Length: 450
Image 1 (tube, rainbow, N blue to C red):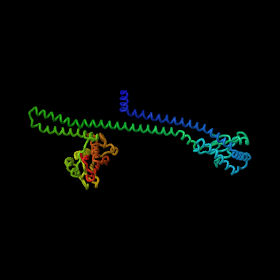
Image 2 (cartoon, rainbow, N blue to C red):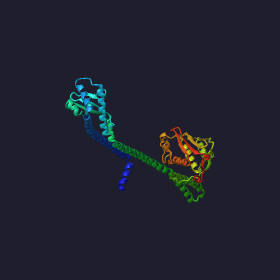
Image 3 (cartoon, rainbow, N blue to C red):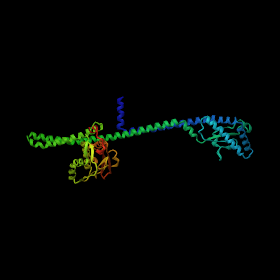
Image 4 (cartoon, one colour):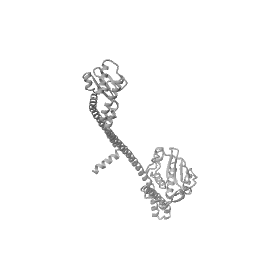
C-alpha cells in the first residue's frame, strides 16, 4: 500500500502538469455528466407536468359541467357566435370571472397556484377562438397543447366535440425549477466544492513548486556561502601547518587571526539560520530594554559609513522623531539594521546612496531606510519577506545569499509589536519603513522583558 502511495506522490510531485491535466479533464467530464443528468431530470419533470395537466384539465372540465350557471353562460356565448351576433360584453365578462374562479380552485388543489395562465374557448371545426382571457388576438396553437372538452351540457346543446377550452402557462419553467431545485442546488454545491478543491490544489502545487525551487536556490546559495569560509580556512590551515613544520611560529600569528575571522564568519552564518528557525518555532525570547533609537542608529551604522564612503557613496541621517525611545532587544535590532543596510549596499550598481530617517508621534516611531539601488519589481513585493525567496530581477541573482535576511527582519519587527512596509520600483531604489511603538506608550512587564 505504501509503495503505491509513494508512487502517486512522486507522480504528483514530478509530473504536476500531467496531474493538472487529468484533474481538469475529470472535472470537465463530471460537469458534462452532471449537465446530462439535469437534462434527463428536466425531461422527466416535463413528462410529469404533462401527466399532471391531464388530471387538472379533467377537474376543470368537471367543474364547468357541474356548474349549470357557467355552462348556460357559455352556451349563450357559443350560440351568439354561431349566429354571427356580437358577443354581449357583460355576459363575456361574467363568464371569464366564473371560469377563472373554477380554474384557480383546481390549480390550488393541485398546488399549482403559482403558475400564471390564460385560457380560451374555441371552435374546433374552424379553429377559431370564441372567448379568451386575453384582450388581444391570440394564436390558437398556444392553447391546443393543454385542452379539454367544455362539459356535457355544452356538448348536448352545441354538438359533440365542437367546443373545447385550452390553457396556456406563461411560467411553466417555475414548476420544473421547483421540482428539480434540490438537484440544481446539490449540483451547484458539488461543482463549487470541486472547483474550490481544484483551485486549492493548483495553488498548493504552485506553492510547493515555488518552495521547492526556492529551497534548491537556498541549498545552492548555502553551499556557496559556506564553501568560501571553509575553503579559506583550509588554505589558512595549510599555511599555518607549513610554518609550524618549518619552526616559523612568529609567522603563524597573522594566519591564525585570519582563521579566527573565517571561523566567526562561518559561525555567524550558521547562527543566522538557527535564529530564524527559533523565531518560527516561537522559542526565541527577546531581551527587551529601552533604547534610544537615534543614538543606536548612529552608533551601529558608523562602520557602514566608512565602508560606503570608501566606495564613493554617502549615507545621510535625518533623525526627527520627537520620542526616539523604543523597548527592544538591541542584538536583534542591530541584526535588522545590518541586514537592511547590507542589502542597500549589495544591490546598488553605482556608489551607494543611502538615507536613514525617522519620524513619528506620541505613539509610534517610523524608521525609513532608503537607497537608490536596482529596486524590486512590484510583482515580487508580496513574496520578498518569504523565507528562501530571492528576486531574480535585475542583477540580484548575481548577489549570493540565503534568502533569509528579510524574512528574519519581518519576524523580528513583528515580535517587537511593529510592522515593516516596502516601497520600491525596479531601477529606482527601495525604501523599507519600520514602525515601532514608542517606549512611553507601552506597559512594561517582567514577562515581556524576559
